Image (cartoon, rainbow, N blue to C red; front, side, top):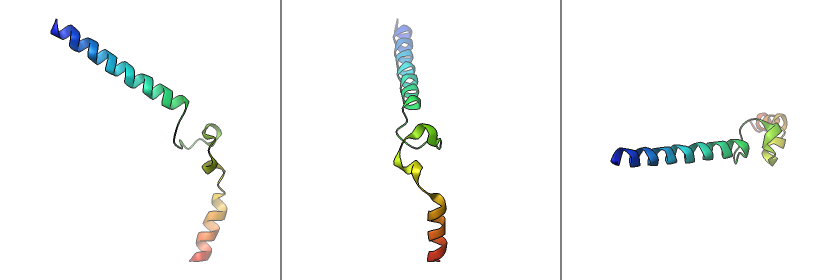
Length: 58
Protein backbone atom coordinates (compact mmCIF):
# COMPACT_ATOMS: atom_id res chain seq x y z
CA UNK A 1 0.00 0.00 0.00
CA UNK A 2 2.85 2.40 0.83
CA UNK A 3 4.48 1.75 -2.55
CA UNK A 4 1.29 2.74 -4.36
CA UNK A 5 1.08 6.03 -2.44
CA UNK A 6 4.72 6.85 -3.17
CA UNK A 7 4.19 6.01 -6.85
CA UNK A 8 1.12 8.26 -7.05
CA UNK A 9 3.00 11.15 -5.40
CA UNK A 10 5.93 10.74 -7.81
CA UNK A 11 3.62 10.66 -10.82
CA UNK A 12 1.93 13.85 -9.62
CA UNK A 13 5.25 15.63 -9.09
CA UNK A 14 6.61 14.58 -12.49
CA UNK A 15 3.33 15.62 -14.11
CA UNK A 16 3.45 19.06 -12.50
CA UNK A 17 7.09 19.56 -13.53
CA UNK A 18 6.34 18.58 -17.12
CA UNK A 19 3.33 20.89 -17.20
CA UNK A 20 5.43 23.77 -15.89
CA UNK A 21 8.15 23.12 -18.46
CA UNK A 22 5.58 23.02 -21.26
CA UNK A 23 3.95 26.31 -20.22
CA UNK A 24 7.33 28.02 -19.90
CA UNK A 25 8.29 26.84 -23.36
CA UNK A 26 5.06 28.18 -24.85
CA UNK A 27 5.30 31.51 -23.01
CA UNK A 28 8.92 32.29 -22.06
CA UNK A 29 9.50 34.91 -19.38
CA UNK A 30 13.14 35.36 -20.29
CA UNK A 31 15.11 35.79 -23.47
CA UNK A 32 15.61 32.52 -25.28
CA UNK A 33 17.79 33.95 -28.03
CA UNK A 34 15.04 33.60 -30.62
CA UNK A 35 13.89 37.16 -31.24
CA UNK A 36 11.00 36.08 -33.44
CA UNK A 37 9.13 34.58 -30.47
CA UNK A 38 10.45 36.79 -27.67
CA UNK A 39 8.53 39.99 -28.28
CA UNK A 40 10.45 41.96 -25.65
CA UNK A 41 12.11 45.32 -26.13
CA UNK A 42 15.57 43.85 -25.53
CA UNK A 43 15.42 42.08 -28.88
CA UNK A 44 15.18 45.43 -30.62
CA UNK A 45 18.55 46.63 -29.33
CA UNK A 46 20.98 47.75 -32.00
CA UNK A 47 24.00 45.72 -30.92
CA UNK A 48 26.23 47.19 -33.62
CA UNK A 49 25.65 50.69 -32.22
CA UNK A 50 26.43 49.49 -28.70
CA UNK A 51 29.67 47.85 -29.86
CA UNK A 52 30.62 51.07 -31.67
CA UNK A 53 29.99 53.11 -28.51
CA UNK A 54 32.14 50.75 -26.47
CA UNK A 55 35.01 51.00 -28.96
CA UNK A 56 34.76 54.80 -28.89
CA UNK A 57 34.91 54.87 -25.10
CA UNK A 58 38.19 52.94 -25.08
